[in-house]
Amino acid sequence: MHARIPAVVAVVGALLVGGATTGTTLASWRDQASAGSGPVSSGRFLLDINGGGTTTAISLGTLPTLALNSGATAGAAQPQQATLNYTVTGKNNQMQLALTGISANQPDLVTGLEVAASMVTTGTTCPSPAGTYKPLSGYTSTTLGTLTNSSGSRKLCLSTRVKGNAPAAVAGKSGALTLTLTATQVRP
Amino acid sequence: MNKMMKGSVAGATGIALLMGGFGTYALWGDSEGLGSGSVQSGTLDIVSVGNASWADVSTTKTAAAWQASDAMVPGDKVTMTRSVTMDASGKNLAVDFALTGLPASPGWSGLAVTATYGGQALTKTADNGGTPTDPSDDSYTFTHDFTNPGAIDAAKNLVVSFDFDQSVSGTAQQDQSVSLAGLNLSITQHRP
Figure 1 (cartoon, helix red, strand yellow):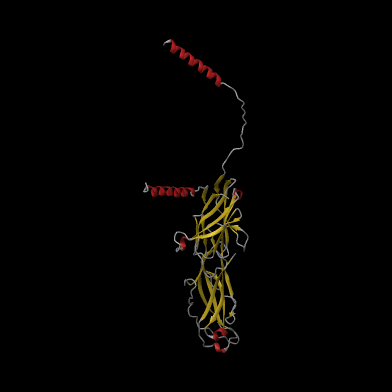
Figure 2 (tube, helix red, strand yellow):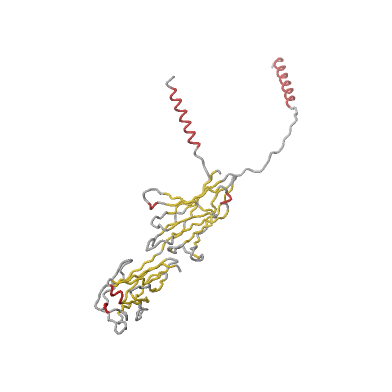
């Protein structure tokens, strides 16, 4: 008789636990629907020079020897070209291109040279000179143009010469010119 | 049947008749109709979800049409709007509103996403997904507890806004994409 008591207690306990569990399974109205749509995507803004890949420095080759100025007349210009490949996608995306800086690793070249730049469509001959000459010393940015939503190529035109008032020290000097081309996203 | 038996049957019949006669008595009685209005249950139903419409609401320009296939650039803010019609009624009906299934897209760090329903801003929370250490399964959930069914009854606009940070620079965050295919809207009743 005494042996049955634990069994009875256990059964009652199980019922209580079962009752408590049943009591928490509340039901509620629920409905759902798909609200899906097409994806949201970002565009592209890429530029390379002569196929050299994006955001990399490339060499335009050796510039022929520049003629010295004579009698306060600037030396003859040496033209150079490069191909700009661009990709601009996005509803409100345009690429503004500018030659934002020119420097030289030889101080006399900085004071003695000037550069003109412009951009034309592929297949078009570069103008001569390429644009308005600007001295390397204190160079101010030259806007080349704005490319709209598409991809393609443009020709970068450069003209380099010895300034008319260049000091004699520029003679016989050699060095590397570094041009900084900046593409800026602008909203139409 | 002998005489004694016949006499007993006749006597019993007589008593039964007398008792039947006693049962047909009348008492006062009255009745009134207690009819009233009906008892009815409420409703909670997403009746329809309209097609998505997109708009360019960038602050730097006037609102213009946007296609789902258009790509965003830094400074863009676009909205996806879907008209949702619900049928919600009930004295003690409060509704948990949830918009789920928007990938957090950690690779597109410059994109901020917000959502409203019927003009009510929804609260955004991040869900770590099935694998907490895997950011690719993270998602956002937008919720709000509408304590008044009138706030969601009838047609309301669900608006999801995507704001691409203007300060993103260099060549960052290009070619990103967030799938909206898994967006799911659910409403769940609870008592206020």
